Amino acid sequence: MDTLSLGTLGQHLQALRLERGWSLSQLAAAAGIAKSNLSRLEQGNGNPTLDTIWRLAVQLGVPFGTLVAPISVPLGEHGVEVRLIDQGKESPQVDAYWMRCAPHTLRHAEPHTPGARESLTLISGRLEAGPEDDLHELRPGDSLTFAADRPHRYRTDNAWATLLLTIVYTHEGDAP
Image (tube, rainbow, N blue to C red; front, side, top):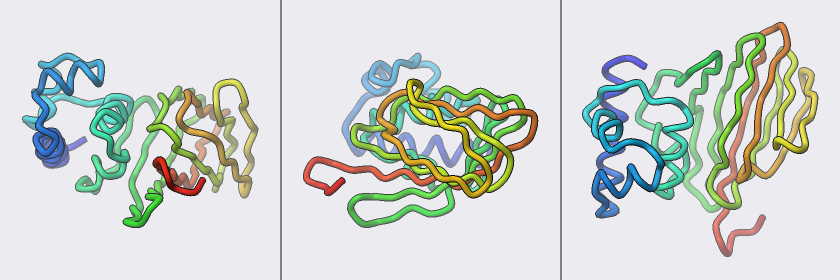
């Protein structure tokens, strides 16, 4: 991530934390990261992983897209690039992402917020995806929807895979 994007993410992260009245220590402990790492992130330094950003979003009680919305560059690590395309403002909230995975990539994703559902549509390549105990092989044009509030993964074969991904964040009282 470039310096400007890191600074933007840090400012937004700090604003969300302060809105909730949380200290650095409280958020860091809840997200399972070192206080010094969170401090560096808020100062626009460091190199946060996708999992770290997800954990922070979950602990702040916001969709991943809300945390990264101010950033216009793709976020990525270990052969995976993710870019927020659009974010709904209604209930339930729906976030849409473009995602690209390099050949021979295995990405284990942590659970999202309770009740979250993920839908994938593969555009190109081949992909094995879904909850750890219920994986599905996808080919271009195939779609898959699953509960994303439990560990899940994405695995490519010997070619790049490109997909559209939506996450629906449901809350108590929302229709599934």
